[in-house]
Amino acid sequence: MPNIDTLFPSKFLKASDLQGKEPVVVIREVKYEPVGQQKDMKAVVYFERVHKGLVLNKTNANRITQIAGSGITEEWAGVQIKLHATMVEFQGEPTEAIRIRPVSPARQNPLRPAEAFAPQPTPAAPDALFERVSKEPPLTDDDIPF
Image 1 (tube, rainbow, N blue to C red):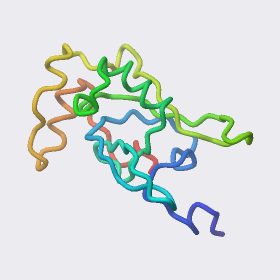
Image 2: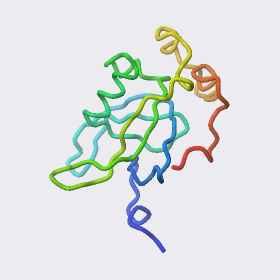
Image 3: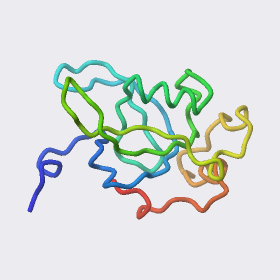
């Protein structure tokens, strides 16, 4: 039986896409693009091996800034974060939203900040970035629920 999310798919991540999981993702880039019915220009963060982008709100942008150690979005590439769903109030109504946590210390980037933001490998070798950022085995498609 179809649910509302399959009837009206979105090109952007929603809390329901996480399916109760808390995936660790690696930021690939931030783009500014039209979002919503009004086509307002918003920042959208894209992740390695994830097809949908996350539209940034101020809360999540500030959290990534804390984790990355920089408010310059071009410097976020290669930073690992953990996504999770939580209930928030939006326009007076409770709604589920995606929020961001730092990766546990055991899984954080072992490189110094200057090395973490070194030039990215060519797109033909996405696993090379993951090996550079994490000493854990690379994620498989089964590890990411969307």
